Image (tube, rainbow, N blue to C red; front, side):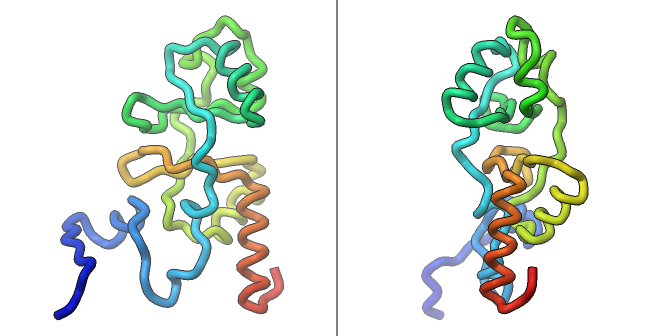
Length: 156
């Protein structure tokens, strides 16, 4: 039949999208969380000390760090408030455990509204099995949603 890229993905379409698989069709051009999230977000492990992590995060120009295990599964999140804690404490004690995560296929406009409505500065984007794709910053989501609306000729 001439198909060169064929996938036999038995888990289903929604899982394919949640894993960040490529999208075709009319909605394919719509910006999505996985494409806007920043993959260069600092990460840390449960047994690290907050002081060391804080210095590393600030040196990288960030005010957040995602806590992951060896498989990059998201376990927690450190935002500015947590990063300012006791430098001797372990990350496991300082982090926000089990943060809300979102899948890469979520439309950026939807996530921008969520982040604003809930006054959330950022959100981890993960695959369906919980592996970190990146951290979506509210300002990045708003900017991408605004650009998408302008490209469509709509008012934001």
